[in-house]
Amino acid sequence: MGKKQRRQLPPGMTYAEVLALQKRQAEAIRQAVKDDAVRIESGIQTKRAMWLMVVAMAEAFGLGPKRVDRFIQAFQAATDEFEQMARDNDWDYALEKLRLKAEEVSGVKIAYLFEEEMNRLKEEHDHEHEH
Image (cartoon, helix red, strand yellow):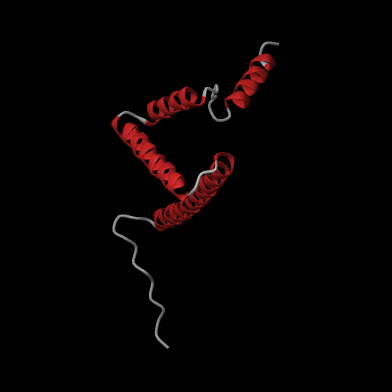
């Protein structure tokens, strides 16, 4: 049998640096897989919410296929407008404009997602640090 050959290290790198680089690369791959899984799960949840919304609207308002199609087209147009606004301005600006529009058309006060919980936690934190 032949002699076992050693792998050559990249020029200017120690074995420890090569191992550290491999570890960072493996972590980046794991994070990318995790990000993809989150993106896929988010897409599934979004589709489920959309289906539930269409079913609820059809049942509550007697919408048939033509009106459901009009709703889906309007939903897509609103989505496209939101995404364009986010690209032209920034994400926070687009979200605030969307929140204000949703309040306007619904007549319902719309808080930010988890706003109440964040305010409660802030109050608890402030109260703990008063003493």
